[in-house]
Image (cartoon, rainbow over all chains, first blue to last red; front, side):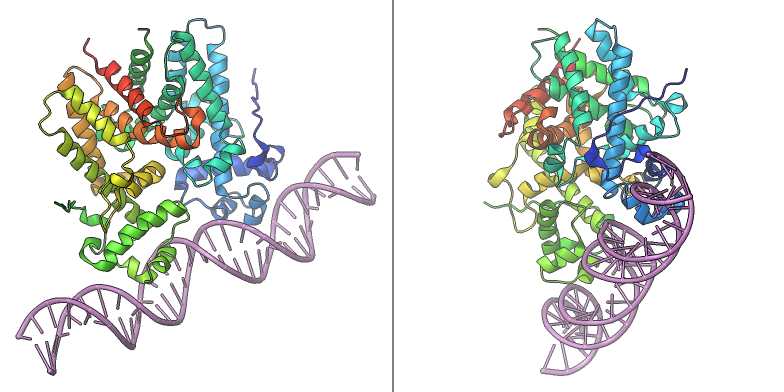
Length: 226
Length: 226
DNA sequence: AAATATATAATAGTAATACTATCATTTTGG
DNA sequence: CCAAAATGATAGTATTACTATTATATATTT
């Protein structure tokens, strides 16, 4: 069985829904790939239009600017991760196991086995979060964008993790900050490992297991009952 | 007594040393202020040149591009923080107190009391780190820039914290990752508190004390002997 | 004080970016 | 098959991110 999971995206993110046309899907799919290839600063709609044999103007009919496209892609990823979290922790009653499952889902590179439909590639999205994730909110428009609910998927995921932490220990004082710390560190420790290894204790080869141990130790040592 | 602390900056950061001329100092000082005002993406050398009544071409004689100026400012800040850490933890023998002092230095907004010479304002630099800090390394040039030692001040500070953690508990397995987590979270939890409070457990008013407690709990619960 | 070196200002110019606008041509949905 | 909608082709603008040239002001040496 092949199931196409469909994520409802915030309408403020686009001018025309890219999921509803071939061109729209091409913009999103190849936009993701090209941002990863060039880096967000070097990425332009002009370059993307050449890549997919369309015109700049056509892309502008879908997205106001490249930052909106970035936020679109990042929101897709976080929504997708939340979906995975729900799927994999479904039926789990033990919050410790739930939390360990979540950490694994955050850290592990989906690689080839990840969702790789004709739309967004999970593996590319994972790279995007690592390299460009924080650029979605590190702008002077954060507050306005936040009011437009552009960060809802990230906040929802944070809330879900936070609730699981509360399940584990209802007395723990900082469940949201702990959740956002785990979320942020899952990707930045990996980025550091690959690019600035002096900031970590992990070797440059894929050392995902150690990152998982590190995050687990931070989490469980902090939220342990006392 | 007024002492002018002088930080030796990496020569690869500039074309002409900005500390050695009136114009150079103006570029750095007002560049910092203008980046904070506009955000790094909206900031241009043209706008800065108007602000300080000089020409774009003159600024380009000091810095190759605006990213180099950003890294210059960020490096100044981290070097300055390391200086403060050395200064304040000097003579301390207890690593627990040392680590608590470091966390305080990282989290607390220097405000008006901070160094505010005719060169770089500590308070402005603090804001810069919060908003633009990660943009120094989130580029496709990380590895090259790292080879040019452009991230040395940050790595040095991380190493120093890491060593103090080792002093506290020589058996702890992740001192560098713990140090970089504390460093990163000191600023991003604050950013979240001020801009995306749903990601934290802190209220929008200045709640520095709680951030400090949170970071201390993460740190000490993890590195506690066992 | 004159000669020289150096820094800055003034100005110009280029290719690329980040858009907006217009109109012709396809594609599609009823 | 017709009308509406989407796309393509083309053009245009202000701004960005630079580089280059020459003139002027400032500092240094002799």
